Image (cartoon, rainbow, N blue to C red; front, side, top):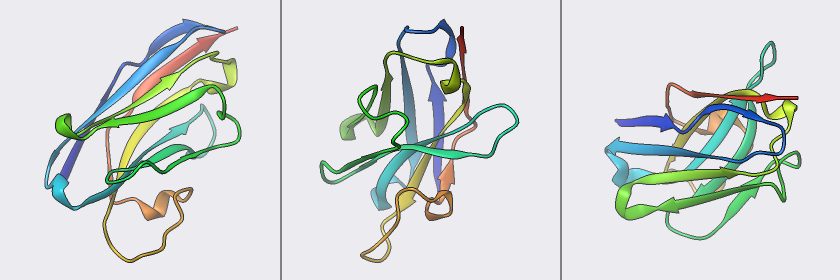
Length: 127
């Protein structure tokens, strides 16, 4: 079992930056990738970014490419999401998720691909 704790959310103005952190604990040796999803008010959960835990592969939603950067620190079992040039439409609860290392193919954009989820951290961007 893996436990995930997100932090770093807050209230900012459009154009500002935030860095989210997600600390993983438990049976992290089986982690294949870690990613970020978000759920805007009144909308469904959507993909943001994912990074492989053993490599350097990253995936981004079109809406955040060039503005957000996902990174990892394996020694700390932590992933980060650096969010720059924030927009009102970035307002959401941001969730960290991990995928277990099973199989050889997967779709990083699908929430159902992930096995463990954090409680979320609120990001609010004013405009």
